Length: 113
Image 1 (tube, rainbow, N blue to C red):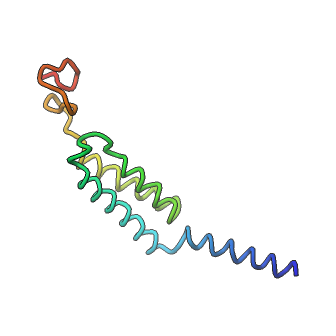
Image 2 (image 1 turned 120 degrees about the vertical axis):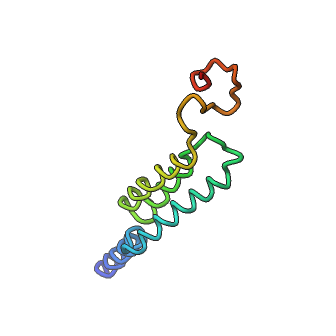
Image 3 (image 1 turned 45 degrees about the vertical axis):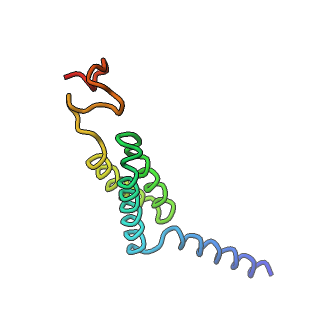
């Protein structure tokens, strides 16, 4: 009786690890799905968010992919999602970049020309 109970516990443990580790095609699919979904949602939310919360959805994508496919998938999502978010949604540095709501007479360092 104890042997069958231990065997069932082992089977449950194995089935749980299969859900989180998967094979390589599963991990790659999770990474691509998380990065593309986060980027698409950020594009759709661009009129509302502007230059604020640039990396919010990228961080959520990293957490989700790490949870679903493991550490390496989370790392791969970080390597892809963060530069994509920075390139597409961060304002260009320099004197022309201003924070949302800044006027030309704003004394902040972003608005100086």
